[in-house]
Structures are given as structure tokens and as C-alpha cells.
Amino acid sequence: MKLSKKAEYAMRALLAMARSPDIPTFAIQDIAASERIPLKFLEQILLTLKNGGLLKSKRGVGGGYQFHKSAARVTLGEIITLIDGPFMPIPCAGGDTTSCECGIAGGCGLGQTFGLLREQMNAWLNTTTLTHVLERERTETVSFEI
Image (tube, rainbow, N blue to C red; front, side):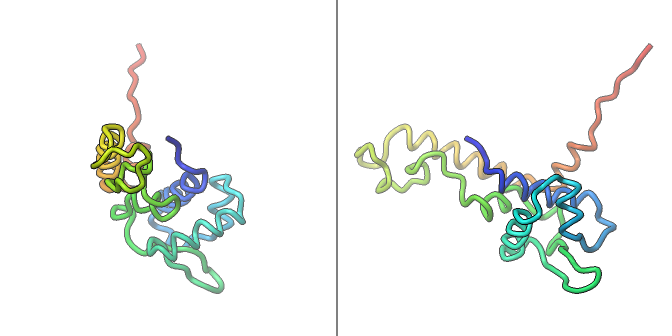
């Protein structure tokens, strides 16, 4: 299972913003350059994040994008769902046995197993915030040289 490039870029853009909490507004050109994201693609992504309530925009001189809520409250699950839709490893993993092709009443073991994976993955994604990711970046391995 693989996230789309669009979802990866969305997370990278938001993390770039979260790394600089002292900067109130971020120019899209700056984010695109620092994260090496194509500008036109980033424009679409940030608009989606704005429409989803994670960002707000400011027009005019000094304009750009701002967080609508703090990075500590933005989860990876929110970002991925806005960009890629809900995590669904196979069609019947969501408990909808009508979309299951196996024909087993109540769903097959495969659908139930991947349904469990879906629940666990969503629980993790919906509790892991941008701040958690940044904390991992700050954690450095300390080495002692003699």
C-alpha cells in the first residue's frame, strides 16, 4: 500500500509550515522551493487543504497560507483523507459486504482481516499529529566518540 505523491506533498508542505511557528503566513513559492514541490501541483494541494479546513489564506501583500488550527491538532489521518480519501486496502475492508466480490454472506475472512488493519491504521493516523512528526525529526541519536 502506498500513499499518493499528492498526499506526501501535502504532509511535507504542512510540516514545512509547522517547523516555523514564528512565521504567521507562508508564501506558496517559498514552500514549493524549500520542499521541491512543483508550484502548480502545490497550489492545488493547498487549495484542497484550505477547503478542508486545515489552512486559511490571506490575500494581498504579505499574503499566503496560514494554519487554521495548530499543528498539534492536525493529524496525518485528516491530511490523507482530504487528499486521497479514506484508507481502504480492499473494497470490502470497510464492512460493506455489498462491495465484496467473494459472495460470502457477512464478508470473507480476507475482508474482515483487512478491515481490522484499516481500523488500526486509522486509529494511528488519527492520533499522530504534525507535532508528533516534528518531535521525531528533533530526536537525534547521540553518539559518544572516544
